Every structure is written in structure tokens, then in C-alpha cells.
Image 1 (cartoon, helix red, strand yellow):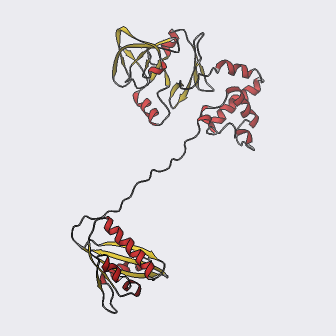
Image 2: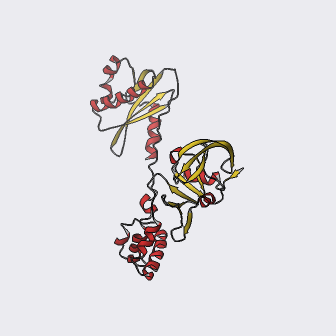
Image 3: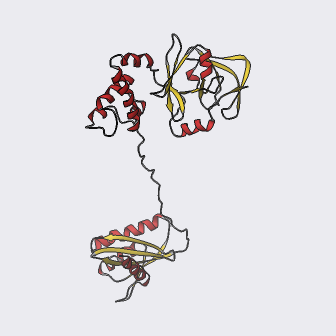
Length: 333
């Protein structure tokens, strides 16, 4: 039986937070073998005579397929593995030099004659992003330190910590800061830390930003009713603004359209807009009940020619259903 220490839940959380993708390789100090899920990271993939059962990565996986990673390390392959996991102890057995950089909080794995692998902390996991060219950083950092005095190097190391405390500001923005208060380093120390250790991965990747909320489609809700309807129509005004109001009964559906004035042309447009919406919802209006408002009365002939029955209110009377609705609207304002 072969074991891995990294828990499936910690990996799942990292994937859900978009910290990890299928080209990340994790360095596991508790695993006694490596297992990969992405065949694009392996060469010489082949079957072996013996099968291995791997536990500790979300149940048990049995496989007899192995491949080679980085030209040096033989690992198992299974497409249902939760991640690409490299065993730290197995890398040591393969002759790798493994060092931990306390200031940068990363692991460097070096095989003679092969690429240097840099495992940086992603959440609580140490990962190599194999989707980008491997960075040969260890020797470069040591060479960069030789350009400065010991005191300058020490202050640059402190500045690297400050960059984390400042929540990884962009490297281009740091030299432009007029002052940095309450910290034991100067802007020049920060600039030297960039020169020695390179640009910070978090500054390159950027910050999380608010995403635009997805639009929720809203559709008007119409009650299904096969019963013929009658339409009550009237006009009302609030602070000089005119409106045409209609109530479809017995459905009790109310519509309000803003009007600029009481001319026949404006009232025709408002009423035709209401009737078009009703027709769109496949309701049948048997007749229209309205008062003898001058602009409305001029539309009676057109409405009858269009097949709409007209039932005008008596002289001096108003349409009672609409009157109640109008009182409700005016009280709101």
C-alpha cells in the first residue's frame, strides 16, 4: 500500500478558489510515491507488470501505469487522481537536492543536469506551475546578492517581508510611493529586494476584483384566463404629469403609460401600446369602458373599426374601477 498525506479537501478548496489548475504539481512531504493526473506533464508513459494501490487522495486508486516527470522521476499515473503529486522523499531518493528558502517560503528541487523546480506556496500547499517555463532562481538569487553589501542584503530580505505585508503592491508602483511609514525599510530597500529576488508572483498575477453580477431575467407574470375581459381606461395627473391607466377585468391587471398631453395622437399611441401588450399575451378584450374625454372620444370610431367594442361612461361620470386605482396611485405620491 502506498500513501499520500495531502488531503483531498485541501486540494478541492484550492481548485474551487482558482488557486490550482491541472498543470500544478504539488510537493508532498508525507507521500512515499508520486501520482499524476495530467499525462501532458509526463514522458515515457507505460504499463508495468505490478499494480500499485494508492491511498490517501480520496479513496483508493489502483494503477499499473507509470511515467517520467522532469526526465528524472518515475511517478504513477491515474486519470482520476485529485492532483499531480510529487513525493518529497522519493525525490530525495532519486538524488535531488531539496532546499527550503525561509524568506521566500518556497522549496527548490534540483537534479543534476535537469531543470530546477521551484515549489511556491499556494494557500497551504507547495506547488510548481508547470504551465510556464521553470524558473532557475536559486543560483540567480545568490549571484544578485553579491552585488550588494551584507547590510543591504539583510534590508532587502526585510523588504521582501514588507511587500507581503503591503498585500503585494505592483512592483512598478513601489518606487513611486512618496513615503512608507511605520516600517523599518526604505523605498531603496524595496527596490533592491525586487532586483535580488525578482518580481513577486502575487504582484504579477494581480488581485481579486469584484465581478459583475449576473443579470437575472425578469418576466411579467400573467394569470392564464380564457374568460373574455373588459378594459377600463381613464386619464389622471400627478403634479402636472399625465398618465393613461387601464384595468383589465376580471383578471385585475393594471397598466400605466406616461402621456405628454391629452391630444388624440398621444392618447392613440398610449392606448395602442396597452392593447398590443394584451394581444401579445393572447387575451381577448370584449369591450373598452372609458369616459367621454375629448381625446378619447375621438378614438371611438377607430377602436370600433379595429373590432373593439366601446362602452362610454355617461356624461359627467367616471369609470369606477379605474377611479379606485387612481386614488391608490395618488395616495402613494
